[in-house]
Length: 277
Image (cartoon, rainbow, N blue to C red):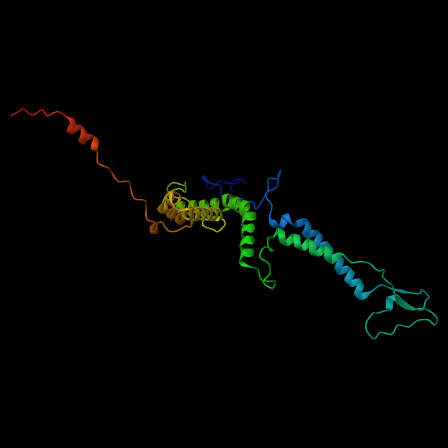
């Protein structure tokens, strides 16, 4: 501080923003994103209110509501409703008696279970079921996993482009500025990010299944159909889609160089210029 004014000590320019803002999902007309909990927030608030009313009803059912004759003998303020308590009353009066609650059909548990089911669905906790539940078959597990991957596909794509890639680029830029790594950029040419998570390879898995189905169908036809399959190229495609190290995949052999017969023919067809004799 000089003369009550702040002094600028250092000024620098960063090629990338030091702040990373990402979103789980977004709604039309909104700039800020939403999380799964925010998406299920109305159901969560309603479920909390239903639980609050259930607890109030339970407290009334446990303690009860009581009525007494106002005869000047019984003082309700001095009564303690505990087991073994003797409450005096005037002769001929009803004394302290419980208030009968009207009969009603309690639907609070039905509403609460419905709300909890929607909350579990929004938080993606009901896809594979609890461990204490009935065992699922392998086909059901695969179908539910595929459904979850389809639901999380758009979310993962947004997180990959708004969180993972900027975070890796920012970390690499910090290490490069400190001299820990070479002075290169992640530009997709020299250095390229390869996302290997199961969700990132979901489309690759579907492509592999389609390719294998086509190969099996073509091999079953036999004849000219089987000859249309380029097995080495198909094997290389499957290896690249499955993330197999490139050292284990044999590269395609370069095309053989055929001899230039045209020049030979031209030389053969040239007239003999040598002198006779």
